[in-house]
Length: 160
Image (cartoon, rainbow, N blue to C red; front, side, top):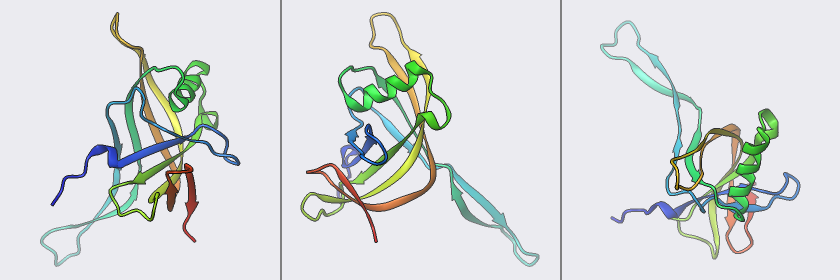
């Protein structure tokens, strides 16, 4: 058995448009990133049961991270631009592709999931003489689209 390292799951933010996506790696300034699945649980018990049964009925996925502000990195610039403009609602929507690079690739093509996210900026600042830090939550919207991501051309293809 081998441990899977963090860099084997990568996240690309669309810094272009929905019609002409430009997939930019979320990396510069981010030292820790966690996807919280926030499962919605339904619990059931019948009259002859001695214990209840739990079912996952949905997910409320959020991706959270702190980001040091690094000018010139496309994903970092996009997020900072939304913060500075104080964008909210659909004006803060983008797309995210999460790639499973721990799987066996077909050349440079890996399994991936594409979904709309709302970029929520929670905080901005930090201590004196420290890099400017932005607290970010990506609130995942709707149903994810499963597919593949080609790392040589940074392109996503939905499964048929």
